[in-house]
Length: 219
Image 1 (tube, rainbow, N blue to C red):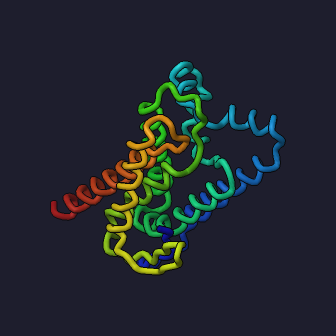
Image 2: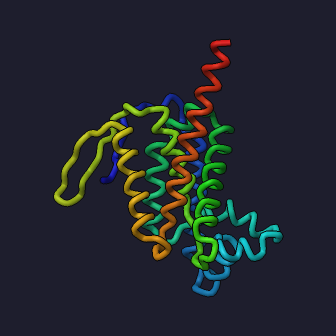
C-alpha cells in the first residue's frame, strides 16, 4: 500500500522537514558521484555496523555514526521512498512539536531505532544506513496525534485508490514490519526491528508528551 496524501492540512511551512529532505538528497547526490573505492570509504566512515560499534565502543567516531548513518541511503528507491513518507507525515508532526523539538524528536527516535537494531543483531557486519528509523518515529507520532486523518492510498497492481483512516494504515504498517522481522530473523538486509523500535519510540514519546501537557493544563 502506497500512501499518496493525507487529509490533515499544515498550519505552517514545514521548514525542518524540507531541510531534512534537502540534506538527505544532497548527501545522496554526493555519494552517487563517488567511485566504488570512494563510496566504500565513505560508508566505512559514516555508516553504522553493529559489530564494529560493540567492538570499538570507546572510539568517538562510532558514536557519530549513530547519527550520520541516518542521512545515508543505499540507492535512489531507498531515498525516494523514505523522503516521500517523511514529507507525507512530517509536516503535521513538525506543526505540533515546533521546529526545535521536532529536530530533537527526529534524531532521538532515529537513535532509538538504530540502537534497537544494534542490540537485536550485535554480531552483524552489514552496514546500516537510512532515515527509516527516524521516519518510523515520525509515523508513530502521527498515529497518536492524527489517528482519524484520512490517507489516500494506492494498491499498484491492479491500480486501486482508496481512503483509509491513518490509525488503520499505520497499525497495518507496523504489523507488517513485525511479521517481516520475525520471518526474516537475522537473514535480512532490512533493519525491521529498527523500524518497529522507532515507531514505538515515537508513539510513546508523543503520548507521554500529550499526557504531561494535559496534566499541566489541569493543574
